[in-house]
Image 1 (cartoon, rainbow, N blue to C red):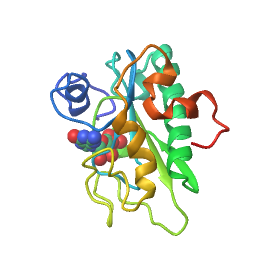
Image 2 (image 1 turned 180 degrees about the vertical axis):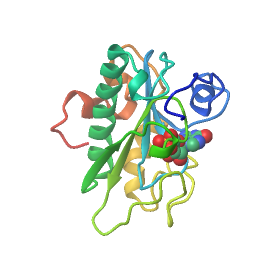
Image 3 (image 1 turned 90 degrees about the vertical axis):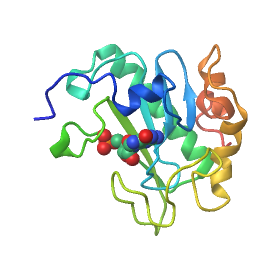
Length: 179
Ligand code: 5GP
């Protein structure tokens, strides 16, 4: 049912885009925004959304929007891989409530995975991590600082993708390099 419907301009992500509720932003440009999931399934769990599209899900997305979004998702994955050194990265995307979607504004999840650490439940605080309260706290140990520090220091926005990724600029332009 929820696969089809009308875009609600008051959904939680629309409010984050408008700055009506706070979010821990990782990078942003005029089209896309990446921010920390408030109920992370693992350390460094990020969400990537379009700032301009009213697509509720993948099926409704304009090809141009999808292109920007998947490009930003790749950057988020590269950034988190360089910053937090996970053993793997999962990218997920849900369409419709029966599929697990809870916020009806198209988004991709970027979820780092660590050997020996179970994945937290979708939409619930990960045990041992809890709510993501600040950029300095995407994780429960000092690996979190690798992600939090540069992000916390950088201003969101800028004139190219690198600066928009704040401390992750190098990672974006040179995915092979270590942060
Ligand atoms: P979905 O279930 O729609 O695939 O994903 C929605 C995601 O948004 C969930 O992982 C949930 O934890 C996250 N989320 C829900 N409300 C908020 C919020 O207010 N702020 C942030 N940053 N994430 C949220």
